[in-house]
Image: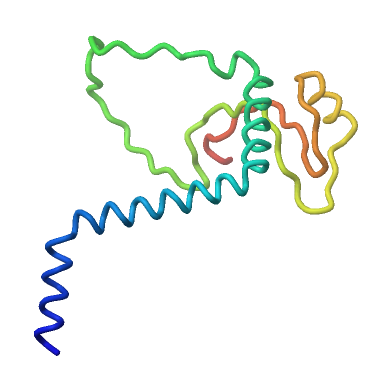
Length: 137
């Protein structure tokens, strides 16, 4: 029994490259079969993603200037603790938001989303750009 076990382990060690190629090939074949089987769902997801990218406002992709590496190093470092109470202020871009079950967008939000080129689905609303963070009073 021990001898058979040893010869089997030796065979695996000797053929590990072939076993690896076979395993990867089988995984690729399974992925292709699933992809072919779910082709319609994949095409719908791809087209949905494409339409979302086409509807994205241009200013979302505007690049911010990168600070120069020639700038003087910061001499005084201010230590800040970031917690849920005091966050670094930051801007949040306008976006769609999924609402909790049973909630509906107001007529004003539906109209605003349409002005921005979006058709809200049931359970979605439009959120305007806003600034958040900072110290709580």
